[in-house]
Length: 167
Image (cartoon, rainbow, N blue to C red; front, side, top):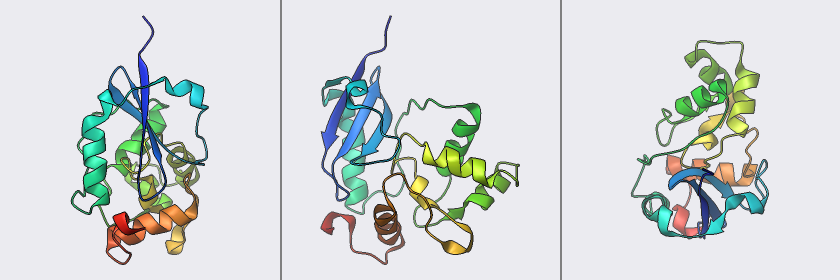
């Protein structure tokens, strides 16, 4: 039996977000103009019903009331990508890691480039916080949603930027 795919579009301070669920479980969050965004026809029918809790938590995050998401996710990727995305979930709110630090934490210190590629393929923006990964020396490098959004998200989380809801 084919999986049931549904989507909805929600407003955010970072432009509309498209949420996609497979069999009722959140599997993708895409920003407008995001690199690696699949074609719209893969998003399934529009139906907000599977997304109530995800929308509630995103609203709380953007309001500055939530620092860690607690959602069931259906992440599809290679074993290495899944390991990287799991490691991203361990980066605390308001903190950053470099690609090299993530590679070390994964037990493969020479894999910083592969970590970067896996980070860039993260299918669940914001909730799996790929924006918290920076280049060596603190440089803002690569972000599928654009460096401006990455900078704004990091400033918001570190308390040095305006609250996300005011962007």
